[in-house]
Structure formats: structure tokens, C-alpha cells
Length: 273
Image (tube, rainbow, N blue to C red; front, side):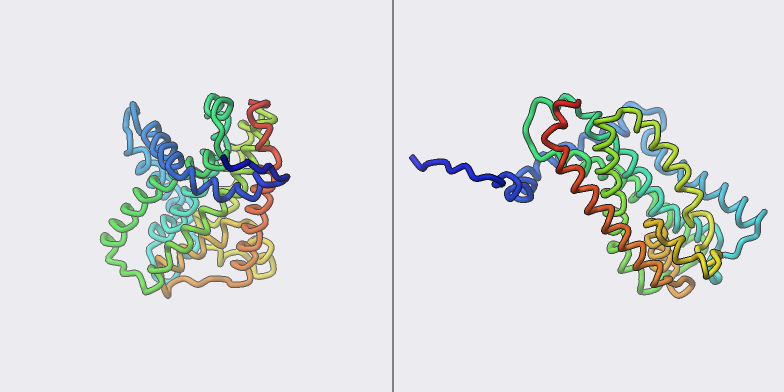
């Protein structure tokens, strides 16, 4: 019989390999969260259509018709708004779902051993399904307005990945705080609501004065929204590269910080839950 050698720190070294070994659990949890979201609801999957469309209409009327803010190039204002709604809806849904994921899975966390990072990551798949539904709405709008995207559209998956990382980092940090301090669940709706109005969803980030634009780009979702509009609207839009790189740096920091805080608390999740 081969002896078992226990080394200090071996579990930490195997952690990322264990994540891959538990990939089937990730698939099960992701599918469960998706089915629970749309099962036994009055309007079901239509909610993923109604929410972004209504928000787009409100922003188009307020910022486009009343405030008369400029659109991007010759693109219809509604199309510009919806191009910003795509990453924002993905980010906000992913952040909300992942931040409460551990508390919602308390029974599983306290009884079964597995890398806990799987739980908040799997919940983000719900946001991805909402994103795919909204993307088909965007395609329908582009057909309606007879708007043809440029070659940049092939880079859209890259910005989807950045949006995923931008939501995962803060989500891991907040879900860690939510396990220890349950009143943090009241903070998330405020963060999401506040973030909607300080992010360039209903308007183009080009309206921000040049001297403040780099500071404004410290909001990590700003670079993602600008990237989405560049991919979808093509030459009608442009990326403010200093701000985009700043957003990438903030995203990388929060991802590192979120994983670090999550890993530090992971062994005590079962005790607090």
C-alpha cells in the first residue's frame, strides 16, 4: 500500500487542480441556478427581455429626447443605449447573484467538501443566459435600424470575458463579507442602483470632460461598456485607451483582492454559515 505523505501547504497547491476536477459540480450548480431562476415564474424568461428594454426606453427618453445628449456617430440613440445595457446588465446580475451565493447554498457548504469558489462562479452563468437573451434583442434592433456592425464585432467575446472578471472579483469579496456580516445583503441593491447612474449606460462616456475622464474610468465597468460599444457600433465609436487600461487595471486588482479574501476565509465559511 502506497503511503500517504501529508505536506504543509499541499492543499493550497492542489486548489486550482481541484477546481478542474470538480468541473461537473460546476455544471450541475450552474444548471440548477438557471432552472430555478426561470422555473415557476409568472412571465419566466420574458423578464430578461422586459427589464433591459424598459430601461433602454427610459434612458432614451430622458437622455436622448429631454437632455438631448449626443449619440455615438450616426448610430440611433436607442441602439447606443442598448449596447451599453448589455455589459451593465451582465455585470449587475452577476454581481448580485454571486454576492449572495454562499448564503443561499448554506446547506451544501456546511455538509460537503469541495472548492467553494465553484459556487459564486456558477451563479454568474445566470447572468450569462440573460446576456444571450439581450444579445438577440440587440440583433433584432440592428435589423430594425438597418445598422451593420464592423469587423470589431468579432472581438465582442473578449469584452464579455472582461465583464465576467470585472463582476467576479467584487462578487467574491462581497460574498465573503456577506457570510460574516449578513447586513451586507442590503448594500448590494444600493451599489447596483448607484452604479447604473454613474456608469455610461444611458449616455456616451465621451460627454465626460477630458480632465475628468481618466478619473471616471476608475469605474471598471466604464472600459467594458466603451469596449462593447466599439465592437457593436464599429467606427461610430472609439475607445479612450488611457481610461480603458485604467479600467483593466482596476478589474485586475479587484479580481486579485476578491480571490485573496475569498481564499483566506474559505476554511471558515461552514462555521459562519
